[in-house]
Image 1 (tube, one colour):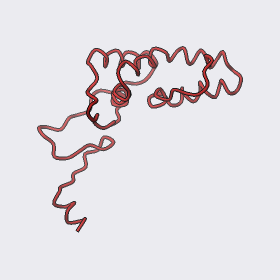
Image 2 (image 1 turned 120 degrees about the vertical axis):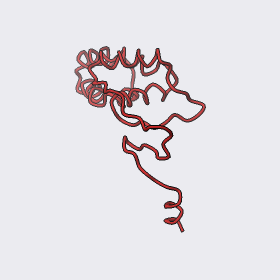
Image 3 (image 1 turned 90 degrees about the horizontal axis):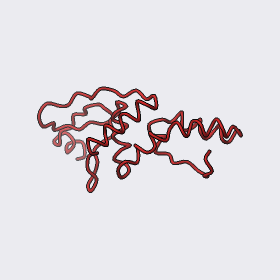
Length: 130
């Protein structure tokens, strides 16, 4: 709505409806309304790019209460100061930031997939493969 063609869809990972509305309003010729929504999202967009993608968006998804999976090297966890900036931007945008999920006690031999603990033992996997 501010002159570009296309969508930077990182925002759509945490605010899909708002991203859709920005585009749809623009395509419907409601450029001023679209621009207002886009300008309202600027703080959040900036926060989503405070570090190399996908580090901030994975953190944002986890703030929404979803399991985003681990980062793979060479990526590292978001800096704590950037995490706070991101959380504040999400709240200011009107997104509901959830409390942290419970962590497994000690070293967990299982992995989390979309917030569920799936218990897979190598011996069971091996038997199923054979």
